[in-house]
Amino acid sequence: MAHRNISRLVNKVAVITASTDGIGFAIAKRFAAEGAKVVVSSRKPENVSNAVNKLKNDGFSNVIGVKCHVSDANDRKNLFDETLKNFGKIDILVSNAAVNPVVGPVLACPEDAWDKIFDVNVKASFLLAKEVTPILRDETNGSIIFVSSYAGLNPFPLIGAYSVSKTALIGLTKALAQNLAPENIRVNCVAPGIIRTKFGSVMYESETAHEAALSMIPMNRLGEVEDISGLVAFLASDDAAYITGETIVAAGGMPSRL
Image 1 (cartoon, one colour):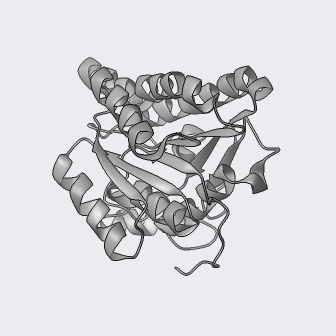
Image 2: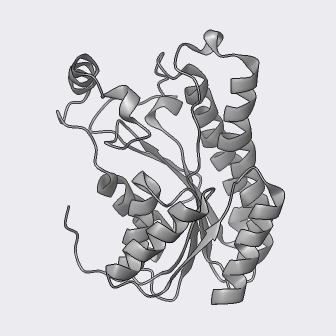
């Protein structure tokens, strides 16, 4: 999907978790295209290297990669330390990492799976935001963006516990935005609908599931990763300078409520 040649993120430094594939990689590529210096991260070093090489082969030189399992305190510290060592500052954090180890309604979720989902999807997002905030305070207008889900507003029975974790991110966005607004640090959230990614394939991989998904989407198509990366770039830019505490849904017209 093509986008206009715009450069809203020049001189910005962005850290993006889980950014070697899917939505995260698309965000990294869009940020780089808009002039940002980008830090790609993931828990597998080989995936980080591959993603950085892809971006550099596409002509984006201001990109580095750091291995980071977001639930590991040392990895999170190293992620920010390496960013500061290479680029000297951080303007933007995009918290995109998430897991969904089980499929089924919320009450069918085993306790260990529930703990893992909330440890990665919610607790790690909170800790990343907490740990980056002192760094963002050194800049004039920091931005934190959480990647939630349409399921956080309208739970999907197929991914019940995951849906609840994504609802928590919407609440975290509102609470942090109120705390940080006086310091000119904006906190926003995006809620993608059914996006064509490996992670989201459970929602459309079979013909039956694909037809069921399309029947819910007024635009009659699955979302593409670029549908989300452009939205995140907008929220990270000065075009969104008066927006904080918001969750923006990109779901092809599926009705949303919370």
